[in-house]
Image 1 (cartoon, one colour):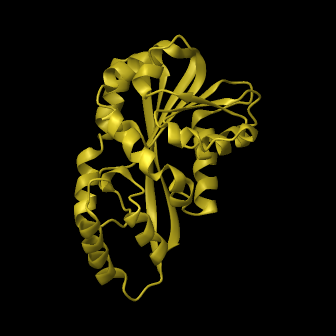
Image 2 (cartoon, helix red, strand yellow; image 1 turned 180 degrees about the horizontal axis):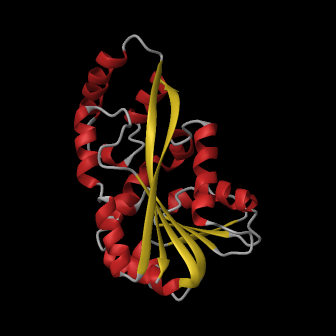
Length: 247
């Protein structure tokens, strides 16, 4: 599964930042919420596990005013190649499970919208528990199975199939010796219909990667029946923030 992730993001690496731009307000809200929920402080060591191109890693590090470079851990070399020296980030080429077997120690670690790629979550959470400092914290950012994102029916079904439930994640964290707690936040915004259709065509999320071009176009035709009279698609995104702290 982690290899499939790397292959998918290798394919869209050059366009990833543009595809995931959403809106500046959304990115600002997301990064500020992550800093707040993680209680990330300037003198702490921060890891973004599955950080992709480092676009959010960079924002989070800036908002937290981190004194040392944040670690952006990513299995796709093409994604990591988007990071520049001026970003003040440390790129680490590794998948999640490999990284969590290392002897590194850190204060806070973020797993943003990547947990559904990891099949061996027991080993992952045990590794994180071992690596976390005494007062450390892990944050999983994910979406509910019934996401309000404006996908076509088949894409919604595939998304739901791939998402682990909040209850299962909290139980797995607790089994690894991490006290779980969670909260759900919503963010309302609109996005150009043509831009959204372009994002779907470029398979900006992994639940879209196995659809053929013809299936994507059929899905867009389905969506157009709902949004035909609109130029902007408005919706409320729903994000789940799940934390774990050493018991």
